[in-house]
Length: 439
Image 1: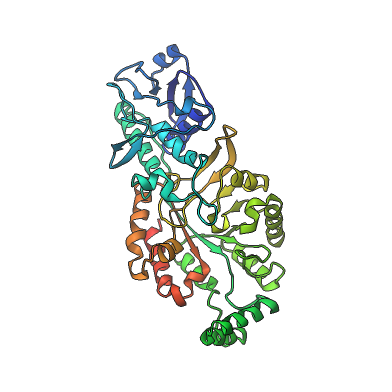
Image 2: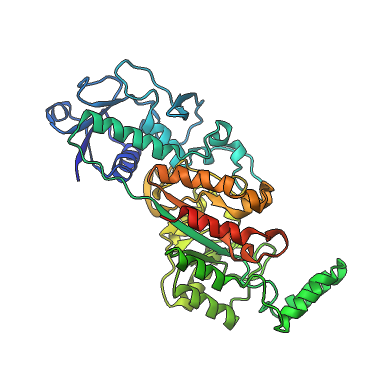
């Protein structure tokens, strides 16, 4: 692995972290930081000066610091924006020898650390950060993985200035993920919930729904949410190994999967683990209850007889830094919650896995974040997109990820493959998505 030497007046945890992500993980270089000018000037390989003034004009890449990476604590910044490489960038800097018109490291750090989500913000009905309050949507780059693009721009500059340098960026990947909020629509709910379902049908005058419920319970019609064999066949056809995130929790207003004691549900979970990765879908109620999160994770682990180390938050409830700290305390090492419910795109400005940096603790934490780009419910429920038009929104996102060697992660649900009610036509959309996004 080739080396990149970075000169800085002061080493900080923030600079180590973001330089390691940009030049290390996204470009495949070994990163070394130095504060010694003599060592830097004597170095014969690729080097980058992260300083107000260039130390070796024409013989280095020069990035002028904006100051964020030398701060401690969380401060409100008056952000200013500029155009770069077809999208907006921020933390603009000015200098004759600067290779970038903005501080690439500070802007990237601000996005991937979710700095703006540590600041005061308006919450939606579920207590979530709204993309309308974020700079990516406001500045029009939510659909662009700008951090990856900035890394590639740096890579091109390094290659041009140091022709012998060998970059080793990661290859494009596609990971389909399925959230199982309700394994079955009618079956295996238990007597009380089944009676409640009938009463609700009758109270609303929905006799058609009551008839469907009856046919499914009598076995004369398949349960519409039982689409797992269809999903398995599709994933096998395109050579994909998906992730399933299972809501394995007690009943609640926003938590309505099958009772965790149900043998058929447990057997389903075991069967999924035979050909897919399985993680926990922590309940809505567990988001502010670490003990409940640990209990649910342990229950799922007990069923599968293996450690559960991956998760995605139910309703995508994500609060910094509490949610991620709770996951780490529950022995979760990988989380797939980084995305918005109401808008497709790149919540952290990146489409590659990255370690979480806890801004309050000022340290890198043992949790890998896997950002997703798209949820089918975003298109259908929030944006009112018809199935016939869905690929017009999906394909540009996949193209954007593929163009930067990123990891394209989709979020689907077993129920959206049912071809029932609002999901008519969406199983075909999923098939088209798999075909288009597969490597």
